[in-house]
Image (cartoon, rainbow, N blue to C red; front, side):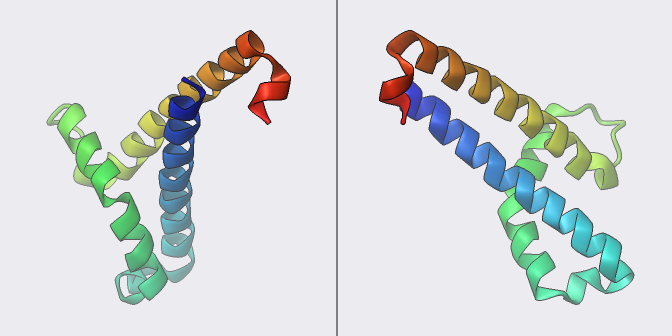
Length: 98
């Protein structure tokens, strides 16, 4: 169970950082963000999560808000995985979690 919690937490962290990096680059470069190669790589990493956000969100949510929805859902997943990891470590012993 510890491996599952750690893996889910890691995947959520990667996606969260990709979305955060996308936001920062978009903020700094403005309309030129589509030509930025780093923005495109982060967009490629975050695209599956944004598509999943479109699938779970209602139709009235605008497409430009989907990265925010994906970020919120991933933050909840990360928090749940962190709680699961901590509770598992407390059950099996802290020494085994290192």
